[in-house]
Image 1 (cartoon, rainbow, N blue to C red):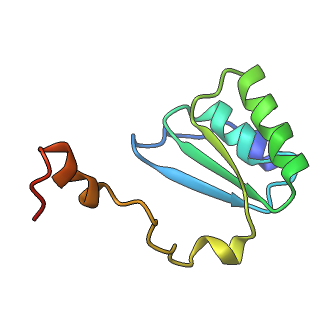
Image 2: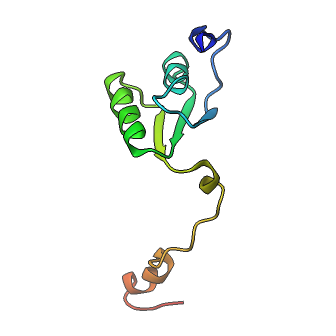
Length: 100
C-alpha cells in the first residue's frame, strides 16, 4: 500500500506503539518505524524466516524502535505460565538464608 509512504502530519507522541500482525517482509511496519522514530513498532509473523529478515532490515536501517516477534497472533494474548525459577524464592538465599 502506497499510503504507508505518505509522511505523517504529526509526530507520534512518545510511548506510542503499533503492532503489525502478519507483517511478512515488514511492510508497512518498517516504513512507519522509519517515518515515526517516536513510534515503537512490533512486527508479528509466525514464520521465523520473515522475522529474521525484519531484524536484519531494522539493523541495516538503524531502527531502534522495531521488535520482530515470531509468534501466531492468537498466541500473543494468552497468559504465560509462571516461570519455574522465581526471583522471590531466591531473595531469602541471597540474604543469608533467611526466607520469608
